[in-house]
Amino acid sequence: MPDFSKQLSKYIPEQAAPIISQWINDTACRFKVTRSRSSKLGDYRAPFRGSPHQITVNHDLNPYAFLLTTIHEFAHLKTYQDHKHRVKPHGPEWKNNFKCLIQSFLQLNIFPSDVVEAIHQYMNNPAASSCTDVNLYRVLKRYDNNITEAIHVEDLPIDAVFQLKNGRTFRKKEKLRKRYKCIELATNKVYLFHPIAEVFLPKENLRD
Image (cartoon, rainbow, N blue to C red):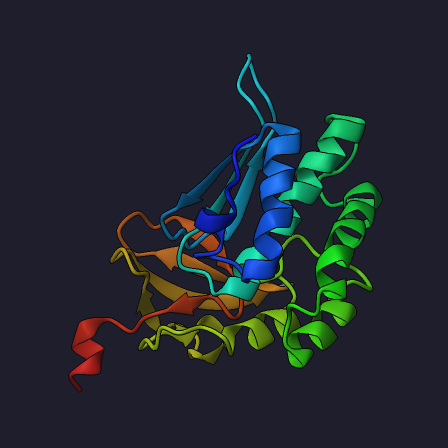
């Protein structure tokens, strides 16, 4: 079986790499490191018409966020193996699998103490993703290496205009339950943004 530990060590703590490599081999999963996606950190796709399981994870996550996202997606894979499409994507079955899969890494003492504390709080009721849990997301962000001019959607006033990395421009509107309604200026379409999604002020605003 191929050993992916060396390649994985570029993205996750070295101690974790052999475990993830074993998971990839055991499940015959196609594991891909992808470009940054503002809408998600990772993704799982079930086998379809002869294609294998596929997991993708954004390349620019810090090692702890990358590892947690990977575990999250393998919990989807395990849930599919056990139940196919018969259960909800983030229902009790997925939550139990996530809690089970993460134990190996908690025992290795890979994570800093503040991340461990945030993980334990998160595991009381794991959400759709680590970035959905505000506390865990904030703690993980402490370990990002890249310093940017990004700000969080929640810090912008209503009707403020902001941009994504790709230049798409939006106007922030009211909060709907847990996310902010935002209107894309070019299309007038409505999108929902997480409160701590990282966005940028338009360049003309930065010159003021």
